[in-house]
Image (tube, rainbow over all chains, first blue to last red; front, top):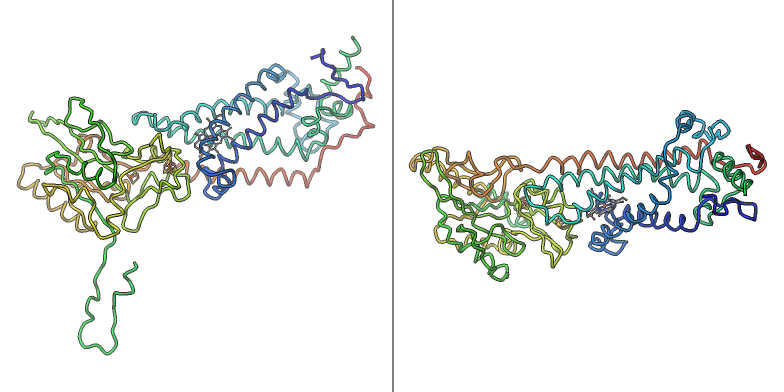
Amino acid sequence: MSREPYLLPNGRVLRYTFRERLVHWLAGVSYVYLLLTGLAFWSPWLFWIAVVLGSPTISRAFHPWIGIVFLIAVCLMYSMWAAQMGETSADKAWWQAIGHYIRNEDRQVPSADRFNPGQKLLFWGFFWNAIVLLLSGLILWFPQSIPWNLRFLHLAAVLIHPISTLLTIALFIIHVYMGTAMERGAFGSVIRGDVSRAWADTHHHSWYQQLLRDSARK
Amino acid sequence: MSQASTEIIRISAHAGPVPGAGIDREFQVCKLVDTTTCIGCKACEVACLEWNGYPFSETTFANTYQTMPETTWNYWNLIKFNEHERADGSLMLLMRKDQCMHCEDPGCLAACPADGAIVQYANGIVDFQEAHCIGCGYCISGCPFNIPRFSPAARKVFKCTLCNDRVSQGLEPACIKACPTGCLHFGTKTEMKELAETRAQQLRDQSGFPDAGVYDPAGVSGTHVIYVLHDAKNPEAYGGLPKDPHIPWAVQLWKKPLKWIGNLGIIAGVVGVFVHYLRFGPKVVREDELRSHGEIK
Ligand code: HEM
Ligand code: SF4
Ligand code: SF4
């Protein structure tokens, strides 16, 4: 981590590298496509989405393939971030101060590392649900090749796939809200990649400190 | 329904009763399959192919009299053949015409996500509209009778239509027309039910089948294809006819409670973050207030 120039010459801090941003948006765009086409088949009131996105038949045909793309993006994310998403002893105190975090009393929130415990929950929530969605999705993909006496598999997938989707929707709503409206500066970090020093200092204090220590050592 | 305006129920200044008043027109159709008089000639299989314009399929010989193991997307009607040993050791050859049952409460329709891909007509026929089918195969798990068949080429599902095209023109289904023994009948549900019960009674009283009965399963609110069976207590013996078919509970759970809980949850989530914004607003970082003022702690 320290090999990359995280403290930029223009006085800002690099939060996400180009590769990280690219993978994030590969996951984001494929997820949104899956969500829209999936919701079209979930509720008759949303069936029009499938019509808008080409046709219901096209949506049905592409959904599983885009699911594969989404899974590749999630695996790339895992390889980039899993090491930084591990639970630490400081996480408990952060969760105990979650009320302060929600009320925007950021001074009273224990300092966070590169990813705060809420982001870790988001990451692992998406990771495990992506695997569940893949496994149940594979069964939904080829219903005709499931023998009659194994059809409980398809019936289970028909329940598990949307339940898992609903869990990701809960995470997704909070994630999008925080990334766009709530946490000013966060959206720029996944677009341009950088944040201000004050932002890094406020929201990811431990991480910022580490960056300063690393650059001082060099 | 369309005939309603040709049926007269009151006539002004008319002496005597109104002709035709009180006639009860039943729209519900039904096919009766009497397994006890089926000889397994398979004329119905051929008639089905001919009427629906499908080619003859290769028959597969698997040490049984059956044409093939299961119906296929372009072979909707199959005589299922089973050897059955009775309690007294005697052997019975059970033949059952297998096809869509046209359930009053169709599981295929309950499971289907595509607008208009499956319809149920007022006469009870359940019909797939392939133009609207997206080929997801949900209907395959929704059906308790293992009927819908996926065509890999068309990527859509197919099944028996109860010859909806013929029935709507006042004709009986093609299979009925072909049957040489009279084991197939077609008419209103009430008539067919009566005929079936009469036949079952006859089998019980005169033919030594004390368990003979009619198969019109209540779990799917009855079907528009009903069977007379020698042994109504053991429908499974007739090539896997389910004893108590019903729409799988997973489909019911998924299409009703789960859907509503999920939809309410999504709406609550969106409203929740909006209210949060109104109450607490954004997290704005003040550039002049660094926790560490840029120093290394
Ligand atoms: C990871 C690989 C995935 C595969 C192979 C896959 C495959 C499928 C298939 C075959 C279906 C059934 C037919 C259809 O409606 O298109 C389906 C339905 C659905 N999928 Fe996926 N999917 C995957 C990922 C996802 C993801 C990430 C989401 C969430 C955004 C999602 C949301 C849905 C929803 C909501 C439905 C409709 C479920 C219902 O009607 O109950 N899928 N999926
Ligand atoms: S395969 Fe076609 S008919 Fe069957 S559930 Fe899917 S859309 Fe409906
Ligand atoms: S037998 Fe199966 S395919 Fe036919 S109406 Fe009933 S549920 Fe639908």
